[in-house]
Image (cartoon, rainbow, N blue to C red; front, side, top):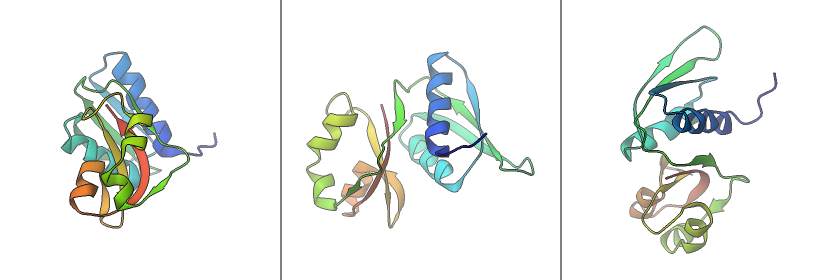
Length: 133
């Protein structure tokens, strides 16, 4: 099996488990990017605890679901955004989020992976990775 976008697969697994009302989901293969995206989602209150399980191959992540996610997905292509675009971001917010102040965009910045609100506070741009609401 060829896996092209592990982040997209991880978020699809979360979306599917969430739609079925599951309490937890196993995500594999694990990666640092997926773990960093999950940390942002955890800080924002969308998912619960998660743990990395080393299975000797690619690793797995066991994630607790809180039932707070309506939709989650990757943003493809991964658009680069400048700080100014993030600051006055109606275009991106309208495209991926349902309403003002509902949900977050996850951005990979030189300061790490963070939500678009954190990126605006730190006055940094980056690359759009995913959305959650």
